[in-house]
Image (cartoon, rainbow, N blue to C red; front, top):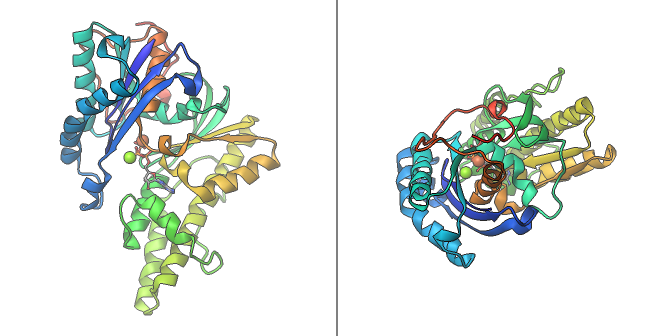
Length: 349
Ligand code: ATP
Ligand code: FE
Ligand code: MG
């Protein structure tokens, strides 16, 4: 089954084609992405109305592009999957309505899929894909969650952030340091020049048992540190780098401690790390060490599939559509808030 995947939940328009008759990464026939980051950068964050309008402009040309890349025509598509949530409602509507319109015209099934299930299963597109069951750390701009994954649609939430997501904290710390949006890669770059011994920032919620996270206190701590340096006239380039380093160390350390706990608690030996923050090099290095210690293994998506993309949506949609799942006739889904635990294994509908 050849499935067209459409991602428009936030600020990237992603489109891909996935073929279930081929396995893993070889099933990915084509993928294309248009990032709106430059457009939103002037505003220091995503402007929802501009995002929706830009998805409208980019989506159809991207669909044409993946068909050309895969040397296929619209008639070769057997099903369409789109991101139905969570995300910005106007942005989601663009993908949902395009998917439903095309599916109606072509007489093929269509299905709305969960954006975080996409992130979660993105490593399945890699040659070295994980097998079920595994622990997943989802770390993105809107989510920080630890999930026990027993199979497709079988997700048990082990812990999550009670306030800001890790990616959001990176973005806010970047803003405080005068860096561009999105801040994760910028903070990581500046942190390279920083002295890890100069400041030690708190590791929130690691002093007690449990797998929940909190990053808003760390954000306040960062702001206070910057203000104190500023007041003392010491906020030079080196000091900014030292703050970035202390912040990154604190976030990474917190994530690593909770992953270690989740692996111990579940007894599982496979750890999947996905979502934008999984691109962070220091996080990967630290998790590699931890996994080595307990004979576990960490799995990641390739760099461009860590952040939002159409490939992960095509993959998840293909698994579910091939199992017979589809949206009811003409019922478009756009669900801005949608807990991952509400998902179930594919069921014919
Ligand atoms: P969600 O998936 O929760 O709806 P989102 O789609 O906005 O949120 P992603 O696109 O998966 O999130 O990831 C973007 C986030 O990842 C941003 O917050 C960005 O700062 C962060 N990020 C990207 N690269 C890095 C990096 N190298 N280090 C730390 N953070 C990073
Ligand atoms: Fe995302
Ligand atoms: Mg994004």
